[in-house]
Image 1 (cartoon, one colour):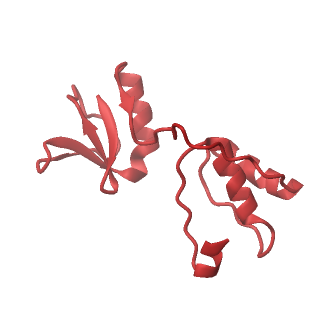
Image 2: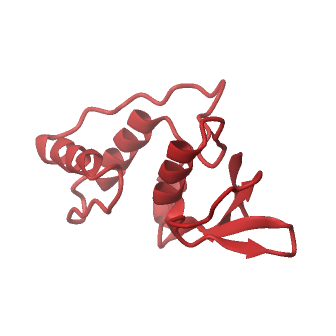
Length: 129
């Protein structure tokens, strides 16, 4: 049993014995596999890991061989924002005023998780930072 990210959705490879209580899962006849919206990842991966001992989660693989990102020094309110984000299960949005160091907080979050990260910015100037 393997869960992978495929074209913005989750694709389940393997044989399911039962689909009850699996969030958002639907049969996709085009590929002959079960598919679910990516927003159901957390609940779906937990339920599959509970039901199937041989379950492999390939959606969020750790980066192998990438240089480690060092966690920058944070001001107390930045550290509190990152800590609150971690307590929320690493989900949510950190909101700080202009110039308060959201980029530093984001880099700290990336360094702590060690996961691939997609950063979205509204302007090219911010992208260059």
